[in-house]
Image 1 (cartoon, helix red, strand yellow):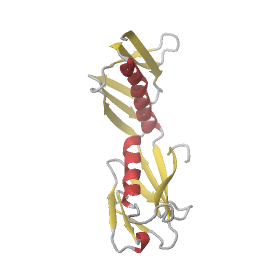
Image 2 (spheres, rainbow, N blue to C red; image 1 turned 90 degrees about the vertical axis):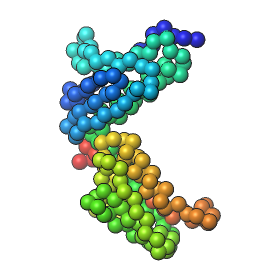
Image 3 (cartoon, rainbow, N blue to C red; image 1 turned 90 degrees about the horizontal axis):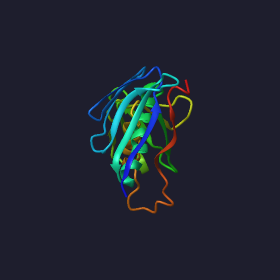
Length: 194
């Protein structure tokens, strides 16, 4: 069944400026600028102001959409909200190195843009992972064997963490016993901690 009009709106904080042009949304804030393309979704994006409060609002509409299209309204708004949080607070993922016997040796290279993992399960191979654009990696000073990934785009930060995690998979062993690897231990914002 088609629904004639389904719409939802969200308020935009004052410190964030947002531009909408042909389903491409640009969000600019104190931490930088992020752009996202929503051309694959059959939705209308409109910028306006709230009549009562006068605050900026983003309205997302779906005309004559199926249930899937109306569900994508909330998805699109969540993505925009992630962009807003990214340019105001930033995203921080923490990863811990887990090992039973051979200590994993991680050295940060390429000006906080890459990591080299040595001695994983005692292997001689050097595993290199480059961070995606706009993601920096540092070692934690307070906690032993902890890596901190910072960035504005939640997708790039989480994908960088996934790349590190996937480099340290145990092959040809019982993974219930061999739990060595680098795992995400915490997900949060940059600004809240400082």
